[in-house]
Length: 150
Length: 150
DNA sequence: TTTTGATAGTTTAATATCAAATCATTCATC
DNA sequence: GATGAATGATTTGATATTAAACTATCAAAA
Image 1 (cartoon, rainbow over the protein chains, first blue to last red):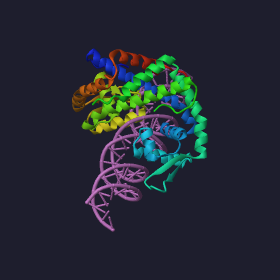
Image 2 (spheres, rainbow over the protein chains, first blue to last red):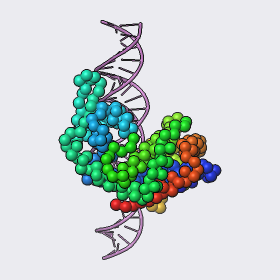
Image 3 (cartoon, rainbow over the protein chains, first blue to last red):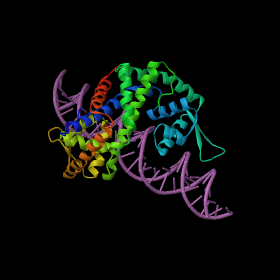
């Protein structure tokens, strides 16, 4: 659904592009993560497991910065992953402010299992675009995301 | 941050494009809605006010379908808007299953006031792209969003 | 040694979000 | 008139998310 705003061409064009961006991102994200239901994971839990899988153990604040979530949120998501035995927390002995979060064996097994499913789902969704279009989309998103105008 | 996944070119390209899409969308959305703090509105509340402003009174399920939220979520967001006097609920006299949600005078005044600010913020963010690039982005997002491959 | 400034993580309060179950209502069918 | 299917809205339980306040910890400065 395009914007119903009766503004200038410039304005409606920007609004329409933004609305389409958000809608497409939400639709694609929902479909990509549908398989997580089968393993009782939420999108944020998956994001944490993914980050730890590829980057190795991280302290909570680094993890929060990496997946762009607040510290308070990170505490809760890690609490829940700890509760299901997928990650463990370990206080740094040298600087007790830091808590390192790492995958347990069970966590490693699970993410190793589901990540290829995730890749396949992303491939399937992104294949609506040609390889050139995917590169174009990435380029446009880079420009958008890095903009810091007020 | 691109994907750290060591897959085929096709796979990493799709993953990178998807990651960039999500990151850009989140970054832009956060910046666009920053001004809502000044009027004590959340993004979802703004979305409801915007829909009612342009489309007129709607029943809750139509509103939920329009802004792609679940019925249960809609109940809560409308509860909160009702509580601050920005919307009102009215039971349909002919079919008492339906509840029409409409803007109060105060709600109309507020959205009329802040929507131009929103438009300006969207314009500012989207101006990182040229008009041609904005149309291109919209086109690519249309293709992505409508894909319904399993 | 104490103070100060900074950082990490937690807690609190509030809101958002979902799926599933439930209740209320309507209408078609028997 | 009773029943069943469908629809609209709410409730329940769980998780996610933020901002802000708080506690714990560290290191540099006084």
